[in-house]
Image (cartoon, rainbow, N blue to C red):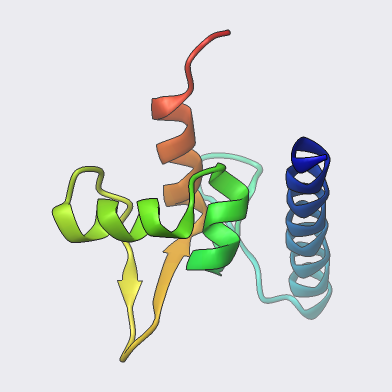
Length: 99
């Protein structure tokens, strides 16, 4: 049951990202990378969304930020912390283990 819930959350966030990309492309707000054909789009996730995306708990992400154990490059506003999607992808890629 918990695995299905995590999968549903991940699908929700990926769908949200896809819709945001399409909306930005329609409005002309997305720039192309000079070296490739991809678009630059790097949304910010709050800690709860980042936890759902990475599979770590919110507390673990907070601990990583506080101890600087992993550099997730958090963007800090007044009392809010946000993570770039590219930083989360880099973090997940670096810490994936084969089964």
